[in-house]
Image 1 (tube, rainbow, N blue to C red):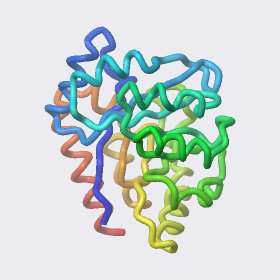
Image 2: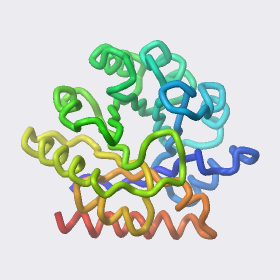
Image 3: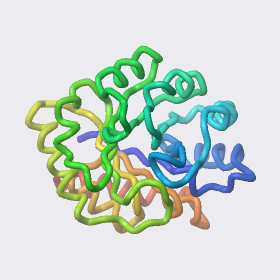
Image 4: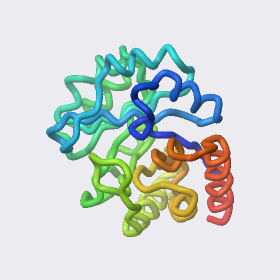
Length: 225
């Protein structure tokens, strides 16, 4: 069974107190931090770039899971790697040559990952899953926090999990969007093992308890696969 990982999304954190929010997630025993980079073009919103990532890199040793929701990610890989990214995820729909972008991420010392939007066929990542460490399946339309989980995405998770098992590949399957203590069981039962959660964690009175509960729920659902 693959390791279950909880990745709080700082998009839902208090940006006026970002350094302390990052430290708090480490104390709450998160496995990594999810950093959503949006350019206002690939998705409607604008968030932050390498300077913010570099600033909070000093605050924690947690793995930085950087999700690039930007056009032409290839030209920015070096900047995000230097800023402190550990995993760099880019979209199949983002306009960069996929194999070249994957190789660029590796050459810059980071783990490459691919992402697909809800309307994109999951088979688009199949030719590359032996070259990457993770696939992110969006369970909402990217660009906004606080959306509801899309149950139809469970079929994508199952299809990817089946293809990985068929090829004896052990990459992480991540889900992002509407993940909470209810939906995490569905996603884990379909084959996901890395879970991005924003408001469910940062909006909780006791985020450590939420992270622990989510992890236990996902482990239980995974055992039943």
